[in-house]
Image (cartoon, rainbow, N blue to C red):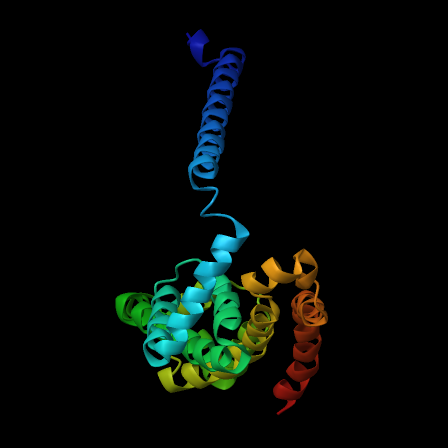
Amino acid sequence: MSNPDNSPQSAEPQRGKRSGRQWIVKLMVAGIVVAAFAILFIFFRDELSLESLAERESQLRAFQQQHPVEVFAIAFVLYVVVTSMSLPGAAGMTLLYGWLFGFWPALVLVSFASTAGATAAFLLSRYLLGETIQARFGDRLEGFNRALEREGAFYLFTLRLIPAVPFFVINVVMGLTKMRTRTYWWVSQLGMLPGTCVYVYTGSSLPTLHQIAERGTGSILKVELLVALILLGIFPLVMKKIIGWLRPQAQSA
């Protein structure tokens, strides 16, 4: 005989109760978050004012001017750590560095730091997983490895140009292949450069908090920032068009 408790009719109320409990938990979490923000605003609203934040920004920029090499080195190491460990926040750090250092210094920093982090993640994947995968599935991967030897650099270049595949996925998957580290380095450096330029330019176009405090929120709407936002929107589309034009030429060559 079948157990009536396991029937579809008895399962519906159980799912309903579970769903109700989940909503209660979500509402409780949302209430805690709102309460936390309210407490922070009440007790630290003077510290969170635009004038106070602008003063702290001035102190940060003064420290950066007094110790340019140290700040630049710390920023570089932090970026390498974030990208090599596949931690979230690389895009935000790129915008922040453009805002803090300016376009050209931030471009050099982010370009080399992102490539160093990507290569470190690539090597970690290779030495932790790559040899095992190749030893176990070497016969099945033989054709893939040959194809990668022929056009692997161009394939990696397209992945770096078009931000459709997550950054850390490219690093891990390519680490499982037999691509040379030197090839991976220079292709990644070149392929990520256009996107890095767009993000750094966007960050460098953001006004400082001191400017916003003096001139009001109207100072945010600058021509440079509008151009940067447009570039962020159309960049993937332009890159797809360029790759579509380059791919037939690479295959024929």
